[in-house]
Amino acid sequence: GGGGDATAQQVAVVTQRADALEEEADSAKRQVARVLERLEGATTAKTEAEATVAWLQLENARLQQRLAVQEEDFERQKRLMIARHEAAQQEAAARCKALEEQVE
Image (tube, rainbow, N blue to C red; front, top):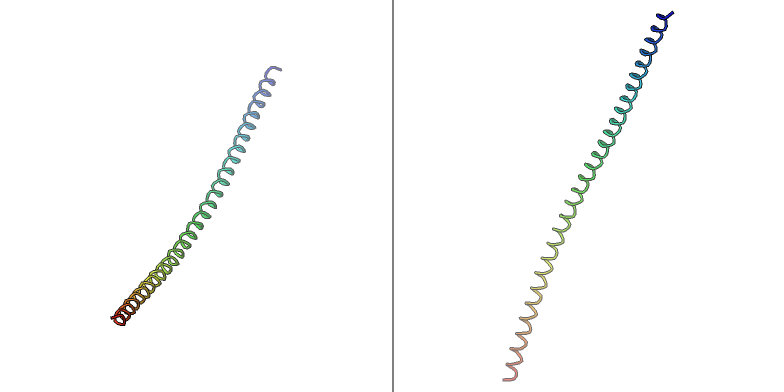
């Protein structure tokens, strides 16, 4: 009955090998699933980052525009103040002249 034992042993080895291969395949599948999940996460993060960058660029453009308007406003006010100051100086000079003429 030695031959029957050998066959049983061969069957056992083949079965073991098949089980091991199945386990490897499952492990590989799990790994692929993990990689896909990570990739999906990375894609989502990339999309979110791109959206954030686009928003920041828009916000930056808005701020630049506001700044330009404020600078324009500041320049206008500065010119107005200078003009007022010059007018006041001229008026003061005219008054001084008038007083000097009165004194003479």
